[in-house]
Length: 440
Image (cartoon, rainbow, N blue to C red):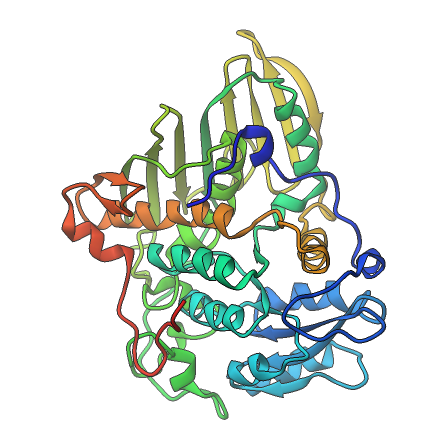
């Protein structure tokens, strides 16, 4: 696993990214796919629900000069239709329910993958083998082993990989980064991340039939074959281990990623301690706990602490999602809602502050622009495969500790736990034929 040389190299949020429009002027040569004389990038969008709507909004603003959406892919015709209506493009994007058609088009430069988690790695690995760069929504892996495979495929095929951790490209992150680089709070020793949002109890529902036109077998893909259930489909699939990673891997991964960023870690943790249970949602249909506390201890002694609670309407430090970075000279409260505050010395003297702004600081467009620029000049994007894997690993290692002994030691060099074979079983998974992983 690649490691960066130092904290300065690791903190790569940077100032606000160039707009999608300006990336057209930086066109050089895109490996693995043909380009037209205008220098436009041709994209295939795979998985047209949820977050893909945000990406489409950003891409269509500049599509004439910068990008062409060549394909829309989804197993649900309703989602294809909705996405197509949002793209005023001529010719209109081609539509398909099979991602293989997108990958077979040698005019496509890159794919944006926003499927449920269990499809992320299988599609990404196939796309890279087909010569496509990939933007993969978080997390890039459904289980730990998939992250290693994504890294290996990116290296083998020379592909650009960007995880959808858009806060790494947010303007507020760039401002906070500069302060951390300058050492305003000293050496950061501990990072705390939390997800504290109210969640509604989702009661179980009986099995039924999938919506008309949906290719449900393909939606299941590599997951076990099960009868259709409304909760195991759009949106609420996140509650089930077959398809998602629970709260920690859905919303929590954003805050874990920012915690790893602020802590400046370039390795995986050595010790993982996890606790959790049901606190407020006793009849919840989810297979995951509704609250979780995980502590990650790194080989150099630094700590990362993650917490999620479903009971609070007020959050922590005034934010439903956030981080605190504790340094030798002070601490920084940081939130992906678009704010940070610094407090210095033993008395907590207020330092630089970035007040919360409601809109414009989530980094969606800047992060996509960073990906497109990386395609054009073959540079390393902010949430590259190695960086993404380090953050996603926190999800997977925490889940393994929670489901087994509660406290585990991880051997990063060997890629397995120390004397805990039962926990090793959660680092990978079986895949239902014929939807297995392609060879890297």
